[in-house]
Image (cartoon, rainbow, N blue to C red):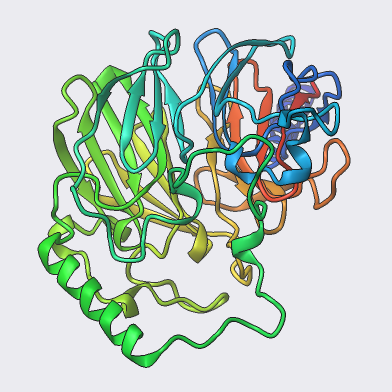
Length: 415
């Protein structure tokens, strides 16, 4: 009898061990998804979407897309001419609202920007040269975060730049990759005197607007809302990136920090502290294209794309840890948009990678890669300039692309 009881205990222990091993393995397994070719439906009004620079899921699991109409070229806008030279296309509004079935249910045309969020009341926040709050019904600005009256010398360009000229029907730009490509024969060498003048102008600007400046100084890369705390987080690209926190109701500045939780007063203005070679040591400050997100347990994940890292702090800016992803990635870097898995514990990070064109799945506790999805390509389910990522309450992944991608896609979880 005792031997039988012992055997049962042993078998029970083995069964428990197998269960624990199974659960442990499950924790390290990446989720699986399938591309949904039926979402979204074709855009109305002969619109052609530009590069996607903002993506947000609202409380009803409908999707807001911030696109960049100025990415479109002449050949994509021939339906605007009088008479039209082709059936398609015309410049779209910069904000497009798409429902769960893929239908456009709203839009408005704000100056294009980078980074966006939607609050529980439906107001839309767009990152431009500052953060502006828009009424989605009228497209009018109802509030904006304070910013400096001057722009950094030679700055404000790239993803976050507002349009600089009025659109002429039928005429576009050089396209979404023009600024990223080296022209034949290489770029001309700058004049030494012009270089010296620019360096002096930058130094004077940084002296006038130090890292502690309690307002937006550069352009915007990311916006996140912490509604329970009545706070708005903005990633200002000044000095390689600053995490800036504002009161959500008054837009008054509250606090901010740099890489490794550096207080704004400790941030360096020396560009050498942002120097980085892929595969090399991490720079002391954020290097550029800083995005962020906030977990349920109060941690801020700031992804410094141009340094292939994710900086983890508390909501007060206390440094906790860092993750390094695909460290040899050059060009645009690997750590783009940050999202979380939909489970209560948010055990996984979902990271969009512009350069490698993957969605990476990382264990949120230790940053270890547990899987990836996607590759470069122009077919459905592939990516060409994977830029933005969002996840709805059901765990559905939405992605937005720049470069030649210029589209949104949806991926359904496989149970």
